[in-house]
Amino acid sequence: MTTPKSGLRWLWLAGLTLVLDQVTKLAVIAKLAPYQDVIPLTGFFNLVHVHNAGAAFSLFADQPGWQRIFFIVLALVAAVVILDLLRKVNGRTRFCAGLALILGGALGNVIDRVLYGHVIDFLDVYAGTWHWPAFNVADSGITVGAALLILDAFKHK
View (tube, rainbow, N blue to C red):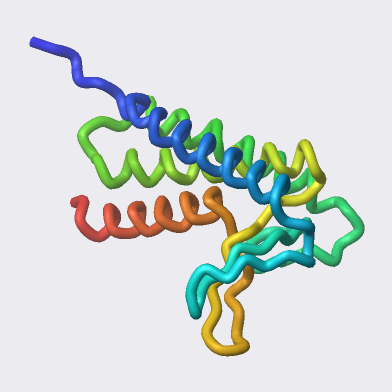
């Protein structure tokens, strides 16, 4: 009889998310001036270079700086919880994949906060003059991961 593998085998997905996030951010830093350059790719999608000192949708970005340490600590605590959950869980593909995507995304944004004091965002989706707040690969990983967790909650008994 073989011992079931833990959900830690999904760490490759967290690592992939983290690496893709950091590589794309380095490319943006090298090619686009912050708040100046725009590369239109379609009629609804641009590449830009913006800085977000806050959370999602720039929440708390206008605060005097406490949010940087707060979001770093919050993400690191979440990473520890996620690693513990992955260690204990087996056989729930959506759940483990979701946690891994959230882990990779959270750590990607933590690296930005530690290195730059803000998160680098560069994906700009828009319709006409309305623009969704710019985001990055880490944010995409967190969003897709959260969606997988919600789906798993409905599907898993």
